Every structure is written in structure tokens, then in C-alpha cells.
Image 1 (cartoon, rainbow, N blue to C red):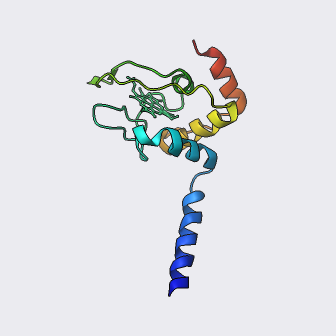
Image 2: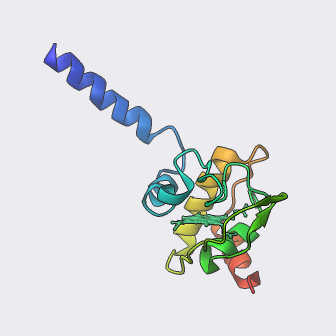
Length: 127
Ligand code: HEC
């Protein structure tokens, strides 16, 4: 019986690890974003904007926001309490690609994978 439970737990771990093609992106999300934006991307009431319905899904601006942070309080008519999105300057283009592909793959209905070249181009175009 104990062995059965063990096998069940281990297989559960594998299923969990491989249900996204962007495993590194998921790891980065869980480490750096989830505490504010939540696992399901729903955000936190009037404090943290949701990611799962963000207008920036699939857009290059998302990359700039992650790099530079942002503070603007209104999204689609809903007023959020002023709380800053911190900047994450240290992600490499590969990490950034995995992160945004993970986010977009989960929540953008028109998901299209971004290459590392796309990311580098986007970063150059940020103000
Ligand atoms: C300390 C909490 C915090 C963490 C950690 C955090 N964010 Fe945010 N994020 C915010 C807040 C607050 C906003 C809204 C900022 C504003 O516009 O006023 C936001 C906004 C955003 C937006 C814009 C959403 C929209 O539709 O306007 C994106 C995209 C985003 N965050 C992505 C991320 C990613 C990716 C990570 C992890 C690398 C992350 N955030 C980590 C707090 C956080």
C-alpha cells in the first residue's frame, strides 16, 4: 500500500512538471511572479492586476513591463490601488522567452511562440 501511494505521488510530480512545454518559464513564474499575480494569474482584488486577462498577452510591451516595472492604476475602467509592479532587469533573453511563452501559452487564446530573436528585438524597442 505504501509503495502504491509512493508511485502515485511520483507520477503526480511528473505530470505536474510536464503539463507545460515551458518548464523553465513556469519555474521563473512560480519563483518571481506567482506571489503577487497568483498561480492562476488572477491577481489580487484591487491591488494586483490580473495577468490571465491582461491586454498585454502576446504583446511586446509585456516584455518591457517585466524589465522596467510599471505604475499606472487603471485597467479597462477598473481602478486599482497604486501599487508598483517591480522591475526584473536580470532575466537573460532565454529566460525572458521562456517566461513570456509560459504566460502567453497559458492565457493567450491566440498564442504564438516568441523566439529569442523576437525577445531581443522587443527589448531594444523598449523606451
Ligand atoms: C510585488 C508584486 C509583484 C510581483 C512580484 C510581480 N508583479 Fe506584475 N504587477 C504588479 C502590480 C501591482 C501590477 C500593476 C501595476 C500598475 O500598472 O499599477 C503589475 C502588473 C503587471 C503587468 C501588466 C498587467 C496589465 O494588464 O496591465 C504584467 C504583464 C506583469 N505585472 C507581469 C509580471 C511578471 C511576468 C512577473 C514575474 C516576473 C511579475 N509581474 C511580478 C505586482 C507584481
